Image (cartoon, rainbow, N blue to C red; front, side, top):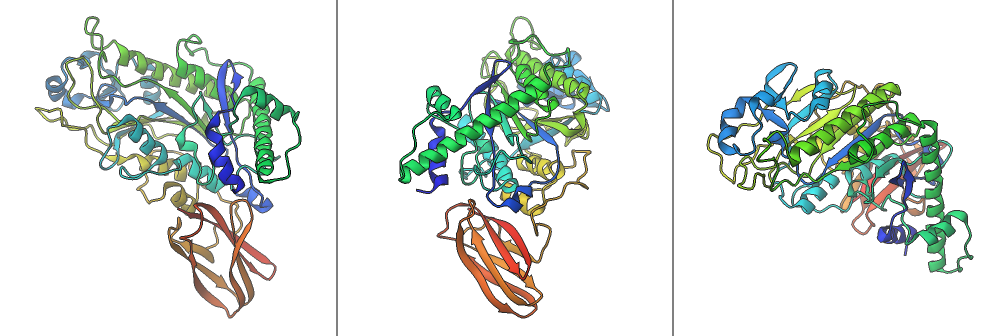
Amino acid sequence: MKRRTFFKRALPIATVPFLVNGFQMKAFGRGSIFEKLLQSATQTDRVLVIVQLTGGNDGLNTVIPLDQYSALSTSRANILIPDNLVLPLNGTTLTGLHPSMTGMQNLYNNQQVAIVQGVSYPNPNFSHFTATDIWLTASDSNQVLPTGWVGRFLDQEYAGYPLGFPNTQYPDPLALQIGSVVSTALQGPAVNMGIAISNLSNFYQLTTGNYNSAPNNPAGHELSFLRETSLQTNQYSNSIQTAAAAQATNLSTKYPTAGTNSLADQLAIVARLIGGGLQTKIYMVSLGSFDTHSAQVDGTAGNESGTHADLLQKFSDAVAAFQDDITLMQQQDRVIGMTFSEFGRRIISNSSLGTDHGTAEPVFLFGSQVKGGLIGTNPVIPANATVNDNIAMQQDFRSVYASVLKNWFCVPDDVLMASMLQTFPLIDMLNATCTTGVSNVEGEQNNSLRNYPNPANSSTIIEFETTGGNIQMKLYDEVGHEVETIVEGTYAPGTYQTELDTHNMAKGVYFYTLKQGEQSTTKRMLVM
């Protein structure tokens, strides 16, 4: 069994937690055995905070289409927010926010919130588990992917997990999830990106190095590998705690009392780590449950109060405090946040003062570098909606993801394709530019060597240019083992193509290297 195969199968046993402010943290890291590919990450210090609103948020009572209020009064009168309580937004009289979202209203009116209307995907699924997997993996509705969209992105940017990291250039984990469950979004093509062990007593032995020598056999080799990755996790925990100590307190006074708002508690930790200098690119936090089949509103106190109002206030207060905090830390220009929920809710409410599983939803982006305002139009509500009516899709959620990768993290097109697996229209929702975001993989911007399709399924065409002379092209797997020699010989100047059969190759990331005299160019390819 290959090391990475063993690692992928062994990881789900348990997770390695440690505490910051009493909150459980998990580390995710990357590495590379190709020294030159340690420079492969796109050169940007930008950060993305992903906020998962678990359970399926009712978008119609979150971002309220006031121009559709008459139809809403017919379809959901028992839960509808009174129009005189809806929070107004600058620049429009057609749309407002739930009255509990004053923090988000202030950010929106200060051009620090963008609301993407009608986000979904073709043929949406109404199961919590399946729909969540679709959003986390960026799959089609009839497709099951073993990898997450963030995991594929990180795998492209930092090849060779888990060997070689942390190192002096990348001392910190690439992604951090605060909580107890490793998100599928962080699963890479070859390995689970979380570090896991079976129990804490074993973890103590592993992190201190106090264990017996492993036997010199395949099982012993895998045990040594697992010990190595556990030591790596301990190094990451030290860097996280160092960052937390460097920013010993949160600067904002807007955070709710600790323990009263779990999302605020999570985002307070994220702010401290960013302020303390941690170089982590991706943070994941969550708030739930938005699965409001019943008692979504308080039938006696008024529709502006109840379970949904409490959740939206926690979300709004937490984001407002976080944005205030990173601004006081002078980190606001390098951090954006993005929300998602597995689906929205139906147009028509039910008799239990709740809503049932629906389709499209609004997605919030927040930060000083987002283009504040509404993206898209208000959903059209039928005059006499039925239980089968849903909000129409305006934007594929994968367009939101692709736009963040392309326009925030500045990834080149081949990395974007390998991360998203398809091409999606980009959305103009960020003020940031990518003039300084370049990939440093040797030859990455050099079109003299490329393959298509990439990702490959049964085969791929590798096209290369040569000025003439002896050339050699070799294929390597993700840990640097030579797989085969693709091309070798003497060529006249020109452009050539060769077909590589991939149908018997294991899924994952590969590198192919073209050597011409003293010059060497390396490119990535993904086999699905």
